[in-house]
Length: 366
Image (cartoon, rainbow, N blue to C red; front, side, top):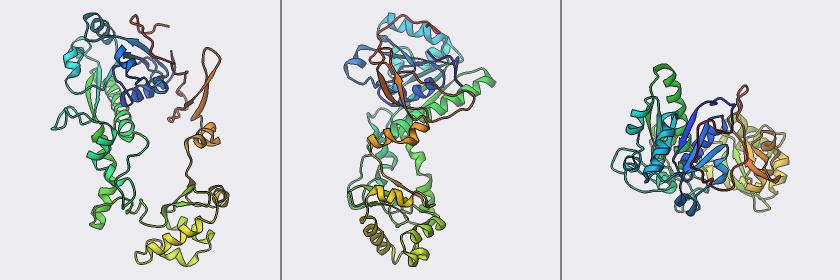
């Protein structure tokens, strides 16, 4: 296991499943925390062991409904710094491993619960997944084409941004506060709360304009030519993000459209400008436009698919796509660590191939 990193010496017990909790504990493990992921046979049978985000962790199988399994967990909890769980509200209480129970054994424990709608409120017991949290928070209403139903994104924003990352921040803040008070605390993370926090800018613009934001029809979502997507000759797409006038001016000059320079946000000719740029971008391939803009100070990017991303020299140079060697000599491609610390950088080890069904574990065990 890791013995370096900014969180070296921090012990984490992770009871969570699927994506939000394991992604959070991956962040902690990448930076040196000793993470023990507690699973069971049902977890394995349901096929929800996402091995990529279970790197840098130890894994043990416990049946928390049994006296033996609960006893092992409570023994580990006495010396843990953090416990992370993602069950519905009330489940850990029934299992006898809730915050109040653990806090009596370990007053310094930091106990983080990630749920869809939080521990309080009228929706606390409602089941849900990422799309439901995006819908309730108002985010989903802003994603997709203006004349089509809202589009569910292909990545789990609520799970990761609303749940995992907020949980990681909450845990780190609680750990820092504990250095001053010596006391642990409980952290209540709602993925829906987290996504609601993404509405600051739409709320600001609605107050500024007096109009509610509409799907694909806002300053930063397709309303103007300067912040839009365009198809290319090879049926690919390019993005333009020339919000500031200087970038827009350079784009117009590059496309030989000087008359449009003063009309960046002109409402009367807005659609005309979009249609003109749509026609121009359709004349060349995405790679041709990439070469055209490469040395021009314009906010642009070609829209890459997953294979292109994984092969992009940018992410290899940034160590965001990394080849790790397993014990059997084979390699596995993993996504790297985005937080780059100069003195205590994070570290990667190959993710496990499957759940490790050990029930015998001591903190610091090799």
